[in-house]
Image (cartoon, rainbow, N blue to C red; front, top):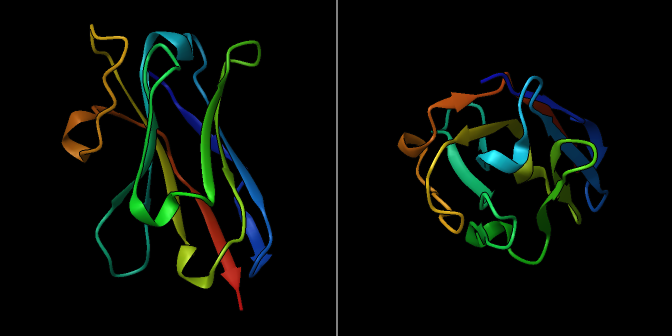
Length: 126
């Protein structure tokens, strides 16, 4: 499973950014997709995930109200819309995927995702 994350960049605090994760050679509708991030010197942490059906989502507490995960089946991408960005959001953001029979499952642990994209860097300046 190949995943390609894109959309990172340098922004100022309170700006917005939209990350995308494409799955060349396969449908994003057939997998659970998640976003994780890793700041310098820190562990990789869960950000958000969307179920295989697209009807279920789950967010880390810091993401609620500011970040939105969604799926665009026509473009075969999963996006992470990030609003009101803060300097502490600075990190490399990774998309991840997993195959699960359940259409509603929304995993939030790194160990539950065997497939990972290359990451895209988001830098938020104050």
